[in-house]
Length: 415
Image (tube, rainbow, N blue to C red; front, side, top):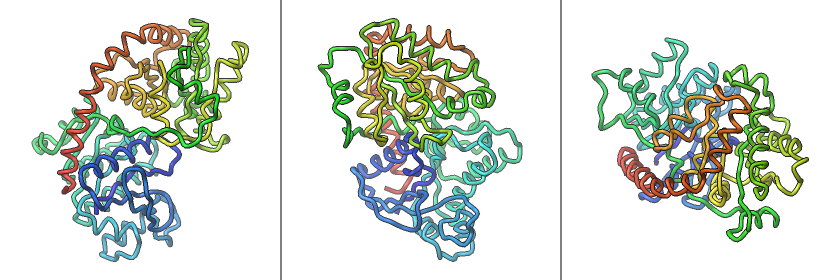
């Protein structure tokens, strides 16, 4: 049994789901027969996915300590050799535990609760004596010296550590010092580069016609992040944005549509939450569409229906150009050869793009106001043919690198 942690497929965040399905597909293709994935359900269940049948096991950081899916309870049971809960039994019986920290959550920036969850899940494997492999992810930053010390202790005890950006790799080298081992401590690409795609099970007729090869008009995609838009003032303050993201996204979309009268735009939510949820991308997309109504109701559509990560990649692959603040939406696009502009609200977007050789295609929302973002997007869209040709030369090599790195990860996991 190989167990995957901190890549739950049921969060609504299709970026996290993309990480999950990329790893499961990669390991399955390399002979893994028994795979477990921690999610936020209850108990142990079986799920048949496109590429593998997996065991789902509930593991959540909450205060219902009497429940078997409580992270603190499962950790305590495992430490004392009492495999009385499904996650404790599963992790204790694993040949290896792989942990990807949601891609960017091995930090204390998101608050003490999430940091504690990141620490406890990893300690479950280490305390059980199970080899822990940290999959390609961002490390830090850490505001607290105590949190950094806890994180570094886990890095030292892990069987292998992968990071996905140069800054994290430098942190790893400095943190481990003489203990740094190039064979075990590696810089890789984001695993979602290799995410399989699948045609959506349900897609309305009009949207399907927009995505057809013979549609007869250019089609741009835009992800509007609910994290940045639904409480734009708070997001601007939290992330240090140059201007509220609702205004940045509106200026970008309007400038693009005005630059090319034939252009149509598909707004692509990548985090599926109820519309009242502050992170709902769908709510942010609908609000933007309403602001663009004067440009013609037939020119802007919102992708609805809550497509999953692999279905979203199918959609993204059929665009002529794409921009977005949700990083795994942009990875889905550029890894499909679609010219892509990343809208970065932190350093993570640049780090991932740079490792894939396209660091110049990130617009920093912390430095560029609405007018500047609009100009940057129009320039990128205008250069889409050149960018597509450049990506065509890169993507085969990028996928080959991701495949080689998954070969190494599979070996580290005991396959």
